[in-house]
Image 1 (tube, each protein chain N blue to C red):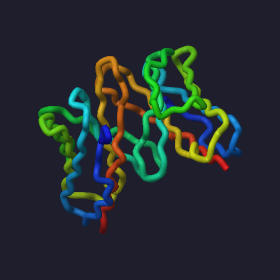
Image 2: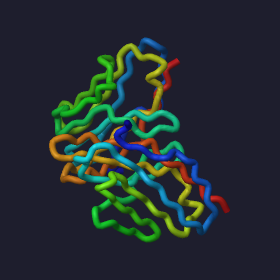
Image 3: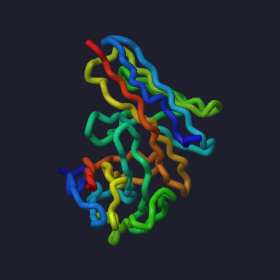
Length: 111
Length: 114
């Protein structure tokens, strides 16, 4: 089983739609979680951290479910500029700082 | 520009040659990571430094790969006897190392092995 798994998509959604991505992780000792965004042929950039209580940043909401070992990202009112690949990132933390990326979920927002 | 800097941006080499890439992290960041990414895949962890100490190295990394961070500032990644399968984007990232591991990436070095 992969350490971090994501549906690669692509998710094709119309402008204004709400879309959600899930990501599962295998190591129950994982301590910190993130969503990164990667545009075509560009480096990944941090989108948001994911906290146990859930967190929101504008149109983006991230949630963590430790019992089921998954995190989610919800995008409301999708914009054309949201088209990108969304990478789920998990860090075990402690003395072991291997920050592991999922394969990414591709989102295409259609006019 | 105070971001993460990688050089060169592109490298084309013949199979069997050695190549070396450089990464200059954000100056106050003490953690530095190397990743490799191929088309359609997420970044694959290669190795990680805390200051000058290399603390973790992927089991996927063959003996042909070596990385250094001699003074805890810039880092180099060397690939010896390159193979066509080494063709990929090599990404460097740095972080403050204060927990949470928010990584800041450079633009990467695109390696093509002919």
